Image (cartoon, rainbow, N blue to C red):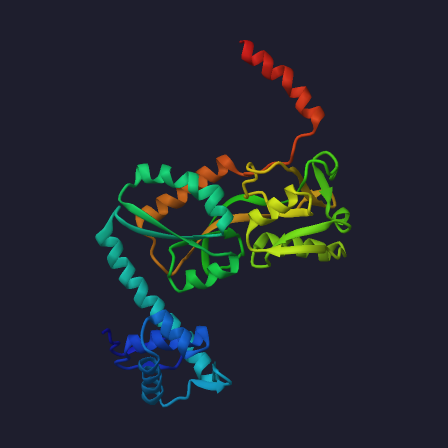
Length: 337
């Protein structure tokens, strides 16, 4: 058990010998909204968790929650106390992590969050390279989309996240090559011209879209609003390869990120544009600037950024037959040499 001894935070609340366990319990309930969910996260019984909250409220002399239906909603005082509690816990966790960094050196666990298609297309071939240089570092992966990563980065559940750059000043970023919006369809469908299609010309086609948790989907939706396009959505899915399989079967046009591997499918790929410009957004490796980074995590970021600059984009627009024919003699000539 850890106790505070006279720690004053940013606001006016003075923590005197405050039990850290109660603070963590309070923050979990505030984030999840119910005692049952918080008890599952913290792996304690609901009665024990409820007692901790009651003891904390009694100690503070404040009511932190109002009950609404089956859930709990923060009071005004509870909202202020939540901000203070997060700040204190972040400082305590950072201190603990700094001690671990000093102990570990080049040995330990590196926790990385990324979207599923980034794990498949980028991290799966990269991790063996990293393991050769850092054999004593165990990389633990978590699937998380852009907005989901914000919460787990703040809570310190992962060291780094890989996602579209949100411009969030709470996080440090290492900028990567951009991710572009692509359209994939069956080869028999004549889609676009010279490897591109304007977003306005997609309106009449049945579209296969990623779930709105994906940043590339939100980028596509924003472009649709700019051009006053009402997309004809046939399916929304959290699984990118579901969209590719349907597109290959001629069941619609899949809107996908250029980070997604498509080599297992026979598809025509074109770049989606708006006013002749590609629709794209910067990709980035991000981490919470309040938390210390282990040395091997910093090396991981450097090596991954270098690798991604080599391989991105993973998927390119399909070459036209004329362009392929122009390249063919040069290939044959090089083979003879």
